[in-house]
Image (cartoon, rainbow, N blue to C red):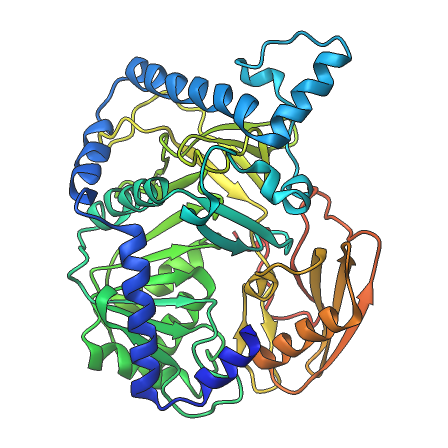
Length: 459
């Protein structure tokens, strides 16, 4: 069904695509914002000055409520605690350390069992996401938690970076807003209610980039938001043309931001470049302040880092689908300095988020394609997936089948890869398990061409 809708969308004239994007934008805006957003933003900014003691008290109260309700009202957790009690375990469930680590596989395979049974499922917002490992996940949120999350976004990046919803902005993201085979603009759509120019990250070919730059100027774009690699590709094109495109700020997300990327983006767009981090599960997020510190959002979740640097999170916002001690799939290092940040905000800092960099794939005509994880969004019977590029004309799709997997599911993914990379051979390889790297991290995309690769060694 989605493929049919997508095909119909591609056949629409550009103005009608813009209308479709705007209608979708109205829906997103109504889900994310309300008359109470301004107050929520003000409260978030006020909390930035709280003392550590006040933060601890506030977070512990929310955590206790989440644990109490999850152990009694969420079928998955209630059953887990029932089994433990039958085995003689009398550990109190109101202590976080007594809860086992929750793996993505459990959430993926039993998604509905994580829902609070007292809530009407039809009143919840449903989202699909792959996460950083290419493993499809199905998530539900209350409208209130969604609005609290986006109020934090308003406070911790728009407000911090001097922009508002009235500014025009461009995003370079993973949605297929233009068919891969399209060779003439527009490679973007205009979302009027959100004042957003959504630009395809799949068309960043050297011959297409000048059109991107011209559209930024024509639309009067004030700031940029997108994948680090996509922003850097756009910036390199501007530098090579010898032109400057002044912006208020460029905000990177979804990928690590390397210093060489920051430098070229700053040079091309004559503005500060700020790194952000967030999870679709909405239990962890961070944003970079003007002094270069990556500050966590304490309201989002309670975070732990184990001996192997695995980032483990317990959500504090979403009561509809509590995730307790959830292994995020990311690796992290907390900031160890006790010296307050020069920005004056009393928010915890994280030293780095590691292991999120997928390789960049290269198309036959020289485009760089990154963050192919949107392919795996959806309710597909696939446990994990990985794309390996062997040559400019072929890739291998390695996947771990889940219950109900059929060959057509693999062929569907192969078709989606071709939509983004052109006419190439896609070898489908079913495996029992995908290999992890030395750090225990699964790379969703692997480039074996010897070029175009982004790795931690580039940092």
